[in-house]
Structures are given as structure tokens and as C-alpha cells.
Length: 73
Image (tube, rainbow, N blue to C red; front, side):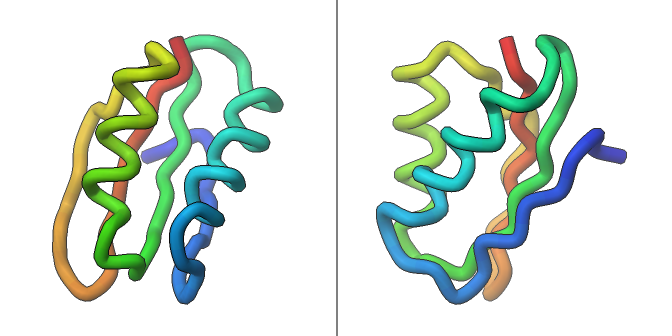
């Protein structure tokens, strides 16, 4: 179970990444955020964001509703 939840469904690029960026600043290191999104580009965006920022993409589930679990590093 994630420490925080973030609903980014029905938001298109770049808004899910913008919202994740804002939320990640509010959580402690080692805590996780579960993000749900419907943007078709979300997987590529979240993978690039995690690599660029150094946070860990723990899990990604694809589908109509995509789910990403991110750990703050």
C-alpha cells in the first residue's frame, strides 16, 4: 500500500508529471506515491521523469487506467 495517492486521470501531458513533481516535495524520503493516470504517454513520461529526478519507479501497471508506484529517493 502506498503512503500517498495521486489521481491524475483525465489529465494530459504534462499535467500528471507537474502534479507528481509538486507532491514528491511534500513526502519524506523512502515514502511512496501511487499515481493513477489515463494519458497514453504517461508510461514514457513517468519513466523519463524518474530517471531524470533520481526517484524510483517501483512498479508500473498498464491498461486503460495506468498505475505507477514511485518511491522518493
